[in-house]
Image 1 (spheres, rainbow, N blue to C red):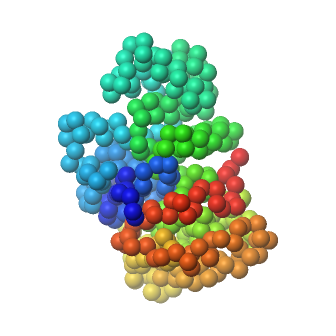
Image 2: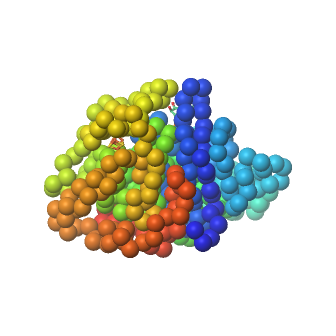
Image 3: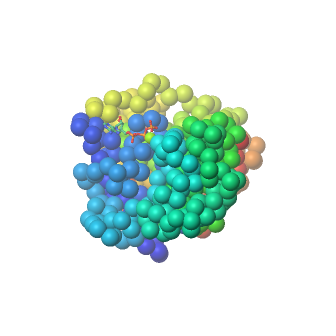
Length: 370
Ligand SMILES: Nc1ncnc2c1ncn2[C@@H]1O[C@H](COP(=O)(O)OP(=O)(O)OP(=O)(O)O)[C@@H](O)[C@H]1O
Ligand code: SF4
Ligand SMILES: [Mg+2]
């Protein structure tokens, strides 16, 4: 990577009692505009990674750097600056908005807390921020319950943006909303990322929303990265059976005529007793004897791509004809781009962030959910 990453997570381990919620995850996020998606089923550790990055939960292993500085070592002024530079938007806007406070006051409060503006100036800024997220500035006098869920989420986003963060963790920002509000919030995130030059971690269990908004995607399973890489090629040609199964569950991505929908048996295993060998083996349609004993290391499997699967090459090879059978709907760039690019120099486990220009969001044919 040529530029220093904005956020650099290395070998992160977070435990809750016997649960290794995050088990050696490395991720890098360059300065914005940039999106990194964290995708995986419930309990895979997505939220914990986001919270650890913001120092809202303690890590027992690994390091998290923001603009080169180790965030767990920040104190005093430097910590305050970090609290301002890194913001989070929750799934449910009601977690970040006080129901007894007018929404303008909520936004103004964030401005005052970080000494950006107070009094009348803060109230005026609050109105301008509401306008920026597509709300009528006159809404400043409303209470949260007088707004729809989508409008409340816009206010939560305005509040997070009010302090001009450089990093935003978006934790399932649309999953509490109806389909129309979801699409509108996703459009808003897309607009803000350019206007604000935002760098964000977009946490979701839905592959359908990442292609337009995230250059890179990391797929998590039981606290570990199963696969990571540029979103376009990862969705087009998964290298891990788990990615393939998740993708096929999204109709607009998986509706290839030949690629039958992969139904995953069962639930993710008990996180307190992860299976031996590959943690995915009890559910994996491709599991072989080796998978039951030998942990697959996360290793390079293409330009900027990593996968933790003994059979990644076979999975990749299988994906190629399926794409051709899709009737040419997808651009042919992905496999070629893989062959052409250099292998990542990053250590195992990291998501190289050097492909920002190579794979802009939207480079896949997949549409976001409407
Ligand atoms: N505060 C906590 N105390 C105990 N265990 C926790 C806590 N937070 C998370 N966990 C456990 O850590 C693991 C990872 O949880 P996390 O919330 O990060 O997953 P997630 O991928 O965000 O899931 P979801 O899609 O349901 O939000 C799970 O096994 C969860 O039960
Ligand atoms: S290592 Fe084996 S069990 Fe694990 S994902 Fe690959 S094929 Fe499946
Ligand atoms: Mg979560």
